[in-house]
Image (cartoon, rainbow, N blue to C red; front, top):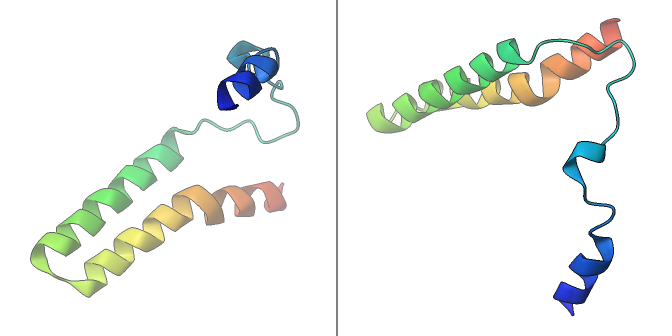
Length: 77
């Protein structure tokens, strides 16, 4: 059943045929990726040394990189 669904949807799943980038949110994602990686590093370090403060800081950096900063940037423009 699943194979028939995937076969039927294969025309719509072409990765090169996605929507083009439009609008004014044309920012390099490198800052967000660096912030995301830093959040994972700090969170991992917090788990190693068993510091809730470092874990919370890592989680906040991850959320900032993936949710808060892109939304704030979009709203501010």
